[in-house]
Length: 213
Length: 120
Picture 1: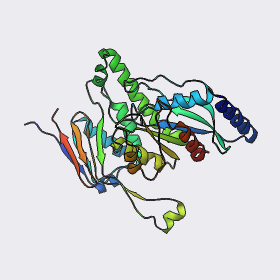
Picture 2 (picture 1 turned 30 degrees about the vertical axis):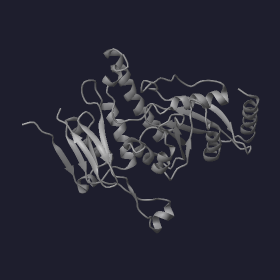
Picture 3 (picture 1 turned 120 degrees about the vertical axis):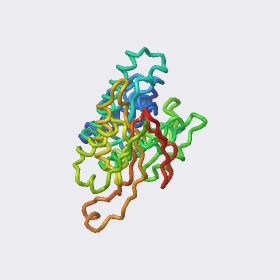
Picture 4 (picture 1 turned 180 degrees about the vertical axis):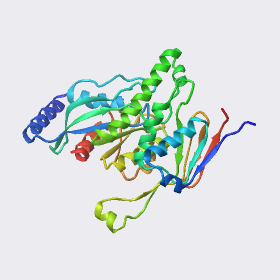
């Protein structure tokens, strides 16, 4: 980690301790395989030096909500926030164990994974109702943002009056269209990023400080 | 004769049910293989409960979840009292729900939802 980031981290911790600011719990939500854990890892790595969870191309790798506490993020204007990041399982309305067989799993492993995934989605919904103060809604910018699950989730988040940033991930891919996501959700800030390459991640941190601070 | 049962539920019937009763009604029908059409959609809280309850009902080689589509909701202009209370009314609209292994949404536009239904 570079010196600038380390300095920013120390400064924000000092300011948080000084002002005893209340901590927000920010949930990373979105459909499976949008890059939620990759984002959680990048945020945690950049500001605490640690990872949050494992990443995989197989859907529903994250099957329990994972919380990383006390992440202090500083903006360029000197303002800062300390938050808990909650990496949640991908939200969906259907899970079939047979989909996991395509990734070379045997039936028993696939059935267990499907069962854990269903429990994970239910848990993610529970967190949203009870324990989350703000949301980063993560979308794969190469996919159709108008999927019903996205429309429903944004509606649920809005009804709870939670601040939300929509993160348009995977802009390093040729089919990515963050503009399509902007037109789907014009009422919310949309930050296009590539979690994998770290592209635009500083803009996301600025928006987080501004939006969740 | 093989076929698919389609249940159309009126807004009056929905209004007479509690949120939990609505979710149970939907899941009871959909698990049996019926397609449900609600004249009025669910509230965000009810949608959240529906997702959670659906997950709890999924079984290997059995029910594997739901497919759901609705028209985009219309934000109604809030009246004076709603403005005062900081509330905005969201009009929920016609909603189609079915078993994920039988109902596939083909196309959704502003005022048209095209769905494809298969027998089990």
